[in-house]
Image (cartoon, rainbow, N blue to C red; front, side, top):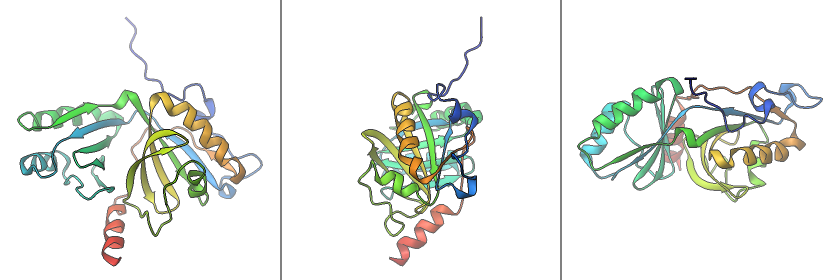
Length: 227
């Protein structure tokens, strides 16, 4: 029996896998860069934020506390956790550690009133960066992503070009991650490529690693404290 083969939902877009420079421009001149981080582990974690036993169990597994502040995310060693709602979090981990994280989390929560669902095959992550990244998002979203409103550490559920997404601000105004359902990924990718064209769009080769920026949550806390 042949082994199953993982395929990105963007398999029909060779440039999304191999990369492609902006037409007539160097990478340094491109106003936008797009890329996919396929095959990451995506988990939906459900539970009550005021359940101390649940919070403690999750902290032991992740090495960090789940974010309780609305629209924030935190990072740990090999894991990103984003607040999705009062009783829900999105957990992102590297592809090669997905199974281990899932087993550890389910074992830790076996006696808790909680739920863990593996969404890995049904979602993918698209990266969008550059000086005009915010301009691209503004074409299909009503979110105010100006750095004064959306610092690194901000995340939210929203829609982009009529597609349901989860957006993470990695660097204020310039670097974003977009989690989208598999069935909408190809459409949204094409929309982003088209919306980025006027700024010069460099397409990065697919990168299956989990991107971490350990100082981002600290930057967000400092911005909140200063406001």
